[in-house]
Amino acid sequence: MQLFGFQIGRVKPQQTAQQDLVNKTFAIPQNDDGAVTIQSGAYYGTYVDLDGVVRNEIELITRYREMSMQPELETAIDDIVNEAIVNDDNGQSVEMNTDDLKQPDAIKKKIRDEFDNILRLLDFGNMGHDLFRRWYIDGRLFYHVVIDEKRPSLGIQEIRYIDPRRIRKIREIQKTKDPATGMDIIKRQNEYYLYNERGMIGAHSNLGTKISTDSIVNVNSGLMDAKRSMVLSYLHKAIKPLNQLRMVEDATVIYRLSRAPERRIFYVDVGNMPTIKAEQYLKDIMTKYRNKLVYDSTTGEIKDDRKHLSMLEDFWLPRREGSKGTEISTLPGGQNLGEMEDVHYFEKKLYKALGVPISRLEPQQGFSLGRSTEVTRDELKFTKFVQRLRNKFSTLFDDLLRVQLILKKICTEEEWKEFREDIWYDFRKDNNFNELKEAELMTNRITLLQFVDPYVGRYYSMEWVRKNILKQTDEEIEEIDEQISQEAKSAAPATTDAMGNPIDPITGQPMSGTPALGGPQPMMQQPAPVASAQPQQQQQQMQEQVPLPSKFQIQSNELEFAQ
Image 1 (cartoon, rainbow, N blue to C red):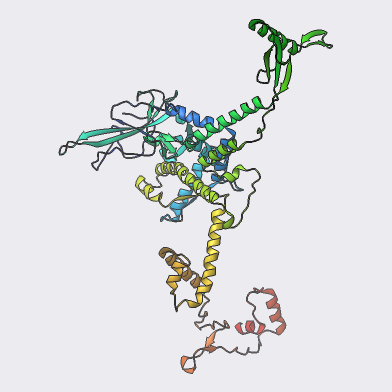
Image 2: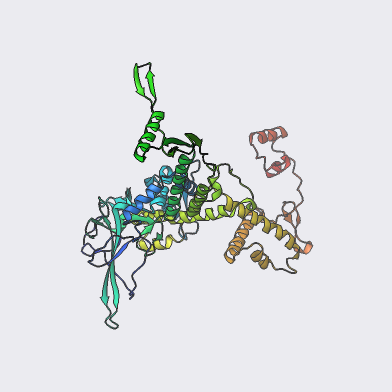
């Protein structure tokens, strides 16, 4: 089977993309990539929802996009996207951190340079918000990686977006019989992407072009339905609250239109007329009151300026002889038209379904960088939710960086699996609640340390204080001790001068003497001999010509002694 695109690995051209499984297993692999698992050589069908909500994945993605156009939902999505992707003054929103990567600095620099190249191909500085928004709404993101097949060492040349409604991942499973137990055991699996320009609407597995997995980068939300056969979006749990909000708003509008006006009741006296004549008479009276002939002076025409009144506003009722005559009364309008509690309830429910704090729904709420006691629990939960979204979205960088580093031969497939565990991405943050919380905790720990410090060595050991009060781990204690030792060595003054004489740490002057005479003593300043070779005036001119640094002021007699 020949697939479109390129493959990374040591697979020969005549071999297929199938991979034999080393360990025996009868369980089908469950991956959160939304792949359709089928038997080898079989067909696959689209998912059918018996409740009538969606019939396939195309309708589900289309519904997500229609939901995102609603004003309330769009506001909530903007809050999430703006919180996740924050650009600084230089237009950067994410950086790679390789501090934990145990590799030479040259390798780290190459990896960071390739990451910057990936961001440039994605135009992440300008399109970062749109990419994250598209991934959040659809629940999946597909990119086609374009390379120069003649010169693959040049790396990725272009990254093109693919509509998720036109591509699907397929996983074929081939089984065999275990000769000992007779159980069906998975022998090998084959993975590829199926692309159809018209969309994945068919039930036949051959309706489309098969593309290799290395040529496609797929990032999904990780949310699966109950059968784990379809990837869901983060908007899926907001479908019901949004529909309820729509119905309540429509019902409120209809109620206001029907109950807002003050309706009139016309009781028309029809005497002893038969029923048919009474109805005709009532219609004539209705038409008489509604017709109004008006002369238009601008055009010179006579037109019928009808005031069409709906029957929801006025009532016309016949009245027989013997009762009261013609009467007109008024029905009061709606009294509770200003109540919007139902609408607000479903708006709050919609925000809860999306994980956005309800306080952001109120327009009068301001922004405050207060203490952690002033931060609501909803804001902390929202910050953690956004962090989870960032970590899941970062899979896009991992997959693209894997292809780029392997093509440029910076690392191998096995090395990248080790590298990715020590590489993480630092997103710019606009929400400083976590930083404020950490700062307040550190302040409390240092304050408590000041009270405990007099008792260290008597009732508490230094190790106990560092682990229980400062909350330092063994790795942190070892690292801090090493840093303190290095800083002490670099900051320590010189112990001897150029002549090998020890230096007094208090005065900084060279010391002389023997231990028998009481140890080294400060060297006495030697008297300068009389300069006979040059006059005093020439010595002053030499001092003026040779500038001496202000940090080391040398007296004139010392300069004369050196000469």
